[in-house]
Image 1 (spheres, rainbow, N blue to C red):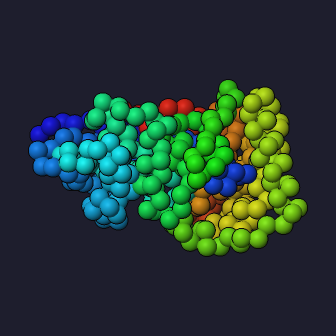
Image 2: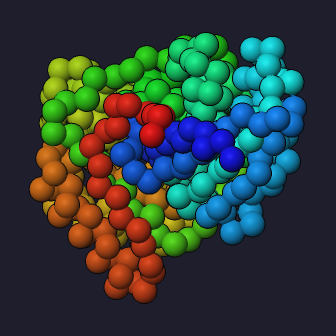
Amino acid sequence: MNAGIKVFAPASVANVAVGFDILGFALEKPGDEIIGRFSDKPGLRITKITGAKGKLPYEVEKNTAGFAAMKLLEHLGETGRGIELEIHKKMPFGSGLGSSAASAAAGVMVINELLKRPLTKRELLPFAVLGEQIADGAYHADNVGPSLIGGMLLIRDNKTLDFHRLPIPKGLYATVIYPHIEILTKDSRNVLSDQVSLKQSIQQSGNLAGLIIGLYNTDIELIGRSLQDVIIEPQRAKLIPHFYDVKDAVMKEGALGCSISGAGPSIFALSPNSLIAENVGTAMQKVFSDAKINTELFISQINQEGAILL
């Protein structure tokens, strides 16, 4: 059997408190791996899925990685090419860590690598977004963009995928805790009101602008003052047990800010150095441990590479 090639696409934190659907960054881990190989049988097929506990379909059109890969092959005029995909899920579903986005990013990445890189990562993004759209029905790149391209991205406009990479101050660390509670993105979106007050809009706009200026100027204190979500977090926090206990605990440890990762239930915090990030992680774990809730903890710098060939 042809050994093929393997790619990795990382988890991501979307929204970053103040940028609902327009801001996200990549983590170093966890992530998904996909192996791709050429086949004598024409067409794209998914031949193996691990780590999904039977939750992912083998039908290409219904699978985020498969659909993204199929759309890329259509664009390249290579639909007759025989290609097999093995999907190895190494991150949890419904965690708020961009699981479907990682699969979609890896799906387009592996096809591009097999075909000797006809497109740049930037050019791959529209096909990855189409793949993730299967999972939650929305066309947005705040998870899949960082997972594919890396770094922290501002998506100025999701429709046109006008995105921009933001600078990351040296020493900035993310701590993310995933409590073993499943919240699906669709359910998390259903709790949101489409009504935002003028006061909220002004405050959130100021915080988003402050975060961006803080990143560009390496102004750690401004970053901390700006990581305040006054629109989405108050609506979704009730879905996550002990959210505010976690937030209070990590802020006492010196975190710059803390909020919900994507649709939740994962919670992220940003810290100015690795020591504080580790202390923040310990504080997060204690809250959930006291509540008898199992968790997984990830401490990471901002992953600047995104999807890579292994």
